[in-house]
Length: 276
Picture: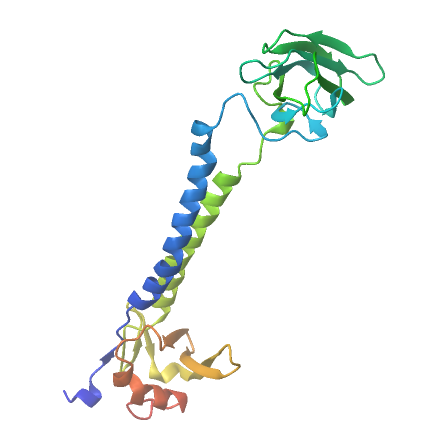
């Protein structure tokens, strides 16, 4: 059969597009894994007796580190779940000063506990929901203050109260990144299924074996894309049939020159092999 009357295969390759995706994605993955390693492995190198900086307003169960200043360091402590709480102040390092720990329930007098130099001070107290205060001071004040770590746990509730569980940011980030990289091959696979396997005298043969005959051809829609400079460029055509649709997107097609005369006929709503 003369080549003019033989079906023309539509050859596609996504190597360049996948390569661009990998070129963008791999550095992002490496950076993300580095951040994730710092997030988790940082605990190996961090002093277990320290925590993030304390704030003036604390909630539930927590661990934080601070430094005394003046006569005492005061925190507003909000309790959401009633229960028995253990409040501990730890003094890291040798020669740390003795501490005085005071916990004041809402509308009541503070209950204090004191400890000797460098020793942790713990106060176990039954708390009800509301706003309370925690005060930490040095038994013998030092110029510039001295560091300490404040730890609050709820008995029966583990290291953190149930309403204070941290949001699993790393887990969500891993899932989001996975979805992004699953989306790219899924998108390419979906596009490939819409691109025909071949175009011949009988019609368009799709990759699943379905044939869209020329007798049902209704025309085509030229697809355009706007560049950053505002220019409209032609990126493909969508072939419309009575019982289906075929996509010819120029970028992944490797034998576009071989298909040129066919595409021009289709854009003129003509059967490339003659009248239907």
